[in-house]
Image 1 (tube, one colour):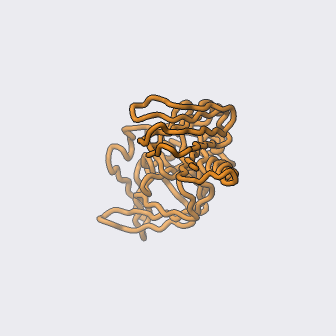
Image 2: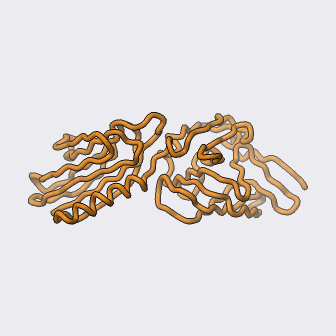
Image 3: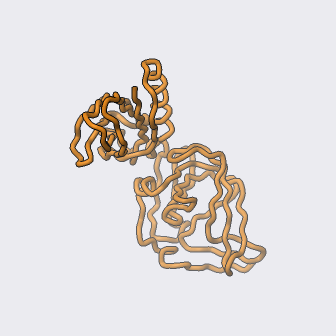
Length: 264
């Protein structure tokens, strides 16, 4: 077998930007654990690439999917093998933690971790790059957007019995004391309720309504992971509803949050 190593660019062996786990989460629209189902390599434009087929386990960020495919540079075709410094490595039946944006690994090889007994591990010596070795507890560190949304959907279902109607619902994640803002057009004469719920890493939460100039008009802070706030707009206009995990458990880089707007 002929083996050769390719330095695609300076980033392949030397990352211009090193991402923390929080950075990776912020840059990703999908974060999930998965089992490598298949690795299929092919040639294109004189290089070798591999399509990695994944069976998705638990999704932490983004929409749930049963399977996902990603493409990485490097692999083996016949007697020819291409190895790229800093590129992620995949083998069948491996457990992985994956950070994706637009179907691509975030930070090249930085967006892929091995999973062992609930811990995500990146061994810098195997990557041949300047990225540091990293190890962390997945459940304690990452946001769980779906846990937050499940909590919120229970609250919304209970509010239906009180005559409320759901207008919109969203799930996302945020760092401790950092807020997510959602612009909405609200109508005078309609009663609104803002409800929010977070994952189980959140110890206190705050929701608020602000005007277009950023002046807060109403807010509610609660201990625990749930909060609600009724709001009566004095005029029809664009407002911003915000949700802030004001306190989260130590070690959590982001918290899953979900916010909904109801009316009657």
